[in-house]
Length: 594
Image: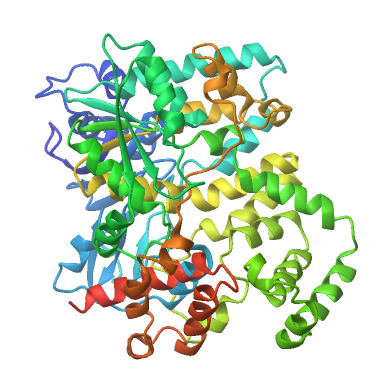
């Protein structure tokens, strides 16, 4: 879209939820229509990009071209709900919201970034600023990038500029906390959530809610129903496998609300049908198994609605990460011991031959499902970290010995597309450690680390790509940056009580529905991938892990991958997380050759 003065050209992906408020400030314009894209074009024409970004609330990625100066500005929303890829290829600057668009360009080179492969195997995703392709970067969340095209040097991109970050938000909240009045904090959060919902439920198309039965999605569904004149449409996913199916909880809440509820179950046959589509839907290798139910629920929702609201963001803003509690408990257990002593013990454990350990300590490994050597190695990896943030990073890693899988030197790789590269998700633990040193409570700092490391490149990537693959628009009221900023002003101690985390959100929910509907242990959105790999997905996995296939691909050591596979199939260790990373990578590489 071109601005009224003809100078600014906008390419835009997303939604600006407060664009009507922005229009009220943009006086004197004869509007041609009612779209938020036109609002963005005129805001940039009048105020410039930095000022416009500071006023926008929403999810977005955009490119703004100034015909007068020859400047190209690329920008991405604060939390990273929408993607933006950019890089030089064949002397030309390419940018898009999908890698597939760049791959269609005749100048595109399909060179693999080995550092991205290593990160995929370590954490299950590829974080900004890298992508799977060398020379192509992902613009980090909360950043904008300006390219002076008339003087740009091919192959060089300036450093992106940060205009918002979780770390800065946490530190500002620390400097300007709310009064320690719990009820007042609950009132403030509920009022802001109502404002966010009022903006995000504006749509001229059918609208629904993803309902898992957990606190976050239940709160969104409850408050949306409270302000609706008719029953809202809710959608949930269940599983055949015992211990993974929580659809009954969502059903009870939907029945209480009087919502029109749609319940689907992800059967193994569905998984088999969806797995081959992962490489297509996610552009680059993406190894979160919960992408499968996300794809299925988005498909189901799209048959009924065009826009769906969800509960993403509640854990990140309101202290609900299970990993935070696990890190704190483990650090309290081991952190009091001198690090030198812990390191020496870890070194000794790792030096013991696996065969000897198993022979001496195997008192029923088949019953426990894990060999003693693996349990000892896991204990050693928990003793070795020298700080709670290093421990949090260890918990986020899928395997502490991932380098033994690599058929390349992980220390030599192409630099990322940006020069210099901004701190990405892998650096989140160091950033959180700095915030802790500046006064942020330890529990809040670990929550910050986990949120900054996984929110934009794992959780939001999963939801956005699954939805976009079926032309469904998803919105996350709990990720409204104004609500996130408010949440970080609440003293961390107020987010927890004897019943667990997210005390603020639970208190709001209790005002609307009986607490018996949602007060239960947090289960998370887990997928029975370990069982599926030993069962219905075994043949698919076997084909991708065949030695000739891995040798031809040239990125992994086939014997090491096969060893992991054999241990998993034999029930000697659950390698499902790392194996899923390997399988997603192998499937993506094979799809490129078709």
